[in-house]
Length: 259
Ligand SMILES: Nc1ncnc2c1ncn2[C@@H]1O[C@H](COP(=O)(O)OP(=O)(O)OP(=O)(O)O)[C@@H](O)[C@H]1O
Ligand SMILES: [Mg+2]
Image 1 (cartoon, rainbow, N blue to C red):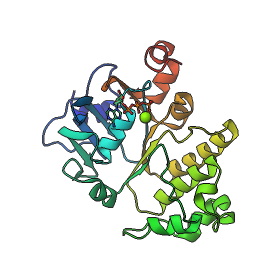
Image 2 (image 1 turned 45 degrees about the vertical axis):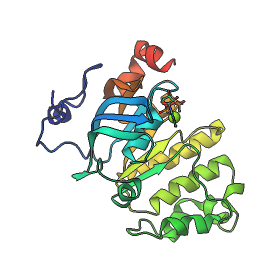
Image 3 (image 1 turned 135 degrees about the vertical axis):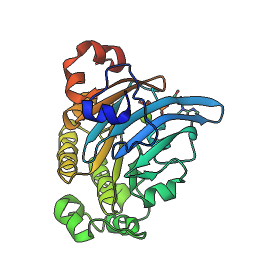
Image 4 (image 1 turned 180 degrees about the vertical axis):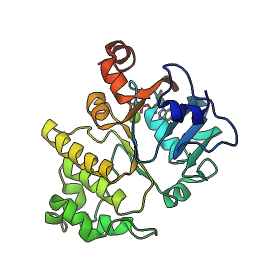
């Protein structure tokens, strides 16, 4: 099945990797047969999937399955090093780019540690996101959307609560003009009530039509937000289908997600 056929079929059968037909125009985002290494350690072992424009894809799997490594490969970080495969975003090849170039063409990664810059206020963190063109939302629009950040605009950002730091991390991405939003464990370390608040923010991002890949240990929460799901195990895709299929399939969840 080609990626193009897969696009029309709406899903791929479990354990069947999508095949790409050369020369066809794949989905808005497409990862094809990615292989990447940390030094000698072979981690991402032939990962392929695609995401349609405006869709949210949950990238799931147990600890060490390769989720963060896959996101870092897509964002074109130096580690892990991509040795084979293609990555396309809105007809642009990311596989030959460095991370700063991928960022320029619209890849926005919020890593697990959220990368809040110490010594800077909330406002300065937001302004820093807008140093490089193309800009996204204005700071005023961000404050309208995130009143908590507006209240804390002059506070040093590292002193924000975990939930507020996650809001700032999302806001910094919106301050840039992005095409692909990559989120690594946005709910990690947050109290359930704050998780709900971040969920509402991400639902708002979804309504904006931003194409998103979310990695989350809280798989059920991610699946409720997502349209589709890809499950990784030992660096390979073991499931590619709709989020609802994973929610409905207790056996699959037990085997690969232990939930
Ligand atoms: N910098 C590194 N150097 C060498 N190996 C690494 C490095 N980072 C991760 N790995 C290994 O790569 C594999 C995949 O790790 P990765 O962080 O991508 O998993 P993950 O699915 O994000 O897991 P988690 O749910 O724990 O965040 C693991 O075996 C891990 O030990
Ligand atoms: Mg991880």
